[in-house]
Amino acid sequence: MPKSTLIVYEPIDKFGRMSEYWSKYISFYKEYWGGPTSPYGVWFGDEYRDFQYKLSKFLEVDEIHDCLFMKGSDGKYLISPLRLFKNEYMLHSDNHIPLQWFILFEDDERKFFYTHMGFGRIHYGTDLKQSLNRIDKADGIIEDSITAHSEATEQSAFLMKLKRIQSDLFELRAWLSEFDTLSYLVLDYGELCSFINPYTLNMDHSSKEAWDMLSNLNNGNIGESRRILNSLLEKWETVKKKVSADILKNDIQ
Image (cartoon, rainbow, N blue to C red; front, top):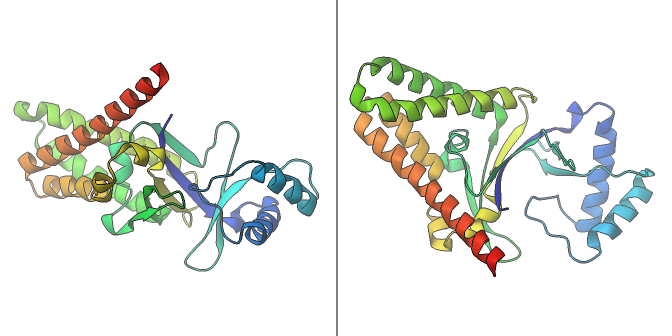
């Protein structure tokens, strides 16, 4: 199932006794592959089995714990441990990207690039503290608008959508608050990119659209805010339907 993913990377020195393990893991991985781990990486053949065997010998352990890692702007490493089952460092969404995820980022934090397989890819990246501040800002804008237009029956459908976004942001805040504020947050479009036309993908600026919606809402431009929100929701609902239809078609074949 194609998924989009929110990934939290915490500072390596926040892992207590595991910090030394992760430091050695990073050292070996960089020497083995010549670079950091990535959500975009692909293992071929027996590469992963060979890597794990040599890593276990290097670390002198029987059980390997894997992670994604990146280097922060201060030169220090941040870690996102990988789990076999539930992973508290990641949130996944099947077949689309929830609107509230885009509110965590700004357009200048967006990166479009091509993977080594030649596929277009998008991710956003920002400091976790920035994301929390944006949640608070968005929540305040939405709350003020709901209060100001609570008696406007013609806006009831729009206000219900805003309340849903507000509720979703509340859940996101609860999740993000579990991590160190010096952490880093990444939104990865994942395999959804392969279901979206490359030109359309390159032109996608959903985070900007989400904040344009909020900016208009904050300035009292309800009609324009509603139009942008409906367009954004429709865009990702279309992606969700296309991905689901393509998967079903392939299953039938």
